[in-house]
Amino acid sequence: MQHNMYRMPAEWAMHDATWLSWPHKEASWPGKFEPVPAVFALMVAYLSRYEEVHINVLDGEMEDTARKLIATCLQQGSRMEAVHFHRIPTDDAWCRDHGPNFVAALDHAGDVAEKVVMDWEYNAWGGKYTPYDHDNAVPSHVAQLRECRICRPGMVLEGGSIDVNGKGLLLTTEACLLNPNRNPSMSRSDIEAALGTYLGIDKVIWLKDGIIGDDTDGHVDDMARFVDARTVVLALEDDADDANYLPLRENLEILASATDQAGQPLEVVTLPMPDPVYYDGERLPASYANFYIANRQVLVPTYRCANDGVALDILQRCFPDREIVGIDCTDLVWGLGAIHCVTHEEPAINS
Image (cartoon, rainbow, N blue to C red; front, top):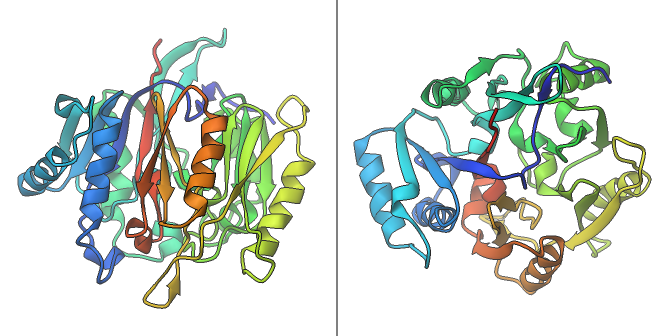
């Protein structure tokens, strides 16, 4: 695969910061919005221990509310001075998908020349929710704020639909990236070429479907994630009667025979699925794979069930040098996303 002089770092690379968009759209958590901001506040409190945190807010009133809530959640080592607020308007809180995709621009020698914001088009997962014009403009605002050059590929792409190992290998799903509600004029080869040009991807591993309850048409960050350059953790359902059983087994078969960008076999570590989480009769996309790799720690969603501890132990073995922090996402996932869906890393890219 031919690519331009860009490279997207792996999430475990050192961060300059994490970006979030403060929640305000009550319709995303109908009947259950009240506990959601506190989950964001707890995430910010943990993240502030080891990196800067940038939060998009609508106005001063929202900033004041967020500051007060974060102050009640501070942990040992939390730094309120590391938390920064920006008047960047948003339609919703899913910063993984509408936030800035920072990449390294490389010179002809392959050395890092500058940090660039890759501004993909955002259409709220195929136009499912409107409006989304504020969300689509977030990367432009952030690039201006951070004084980064901006590049616009002209292709719809959400951050949660891909995962990279930082060496040229990318995970995604056919269900999402090949869905005609994203880029109807682009073929699989067109999409692979764009990923090569703008993210430095040499090889794409195409998984099939995502998990039940995911309204994004199957984001990969709910089921399969790189934990190092050659290891993928995959959510796996043990109950043969569960609707997630067969799709996740099919993805396991694909990964078991997959190789990395250099042709070497991948190691696959399986994560259990939590007990099914329902709210108002609706099956929610609860998954431990929706973790966020931050500086010196990994924030992992938990769901008040027995497999919480099992998943945390597995991820501790995957990240022996990072603290594993479980955060109860039983309320957050009613919005159909968890920790990874609301965070976006700004890697430490220095020329």
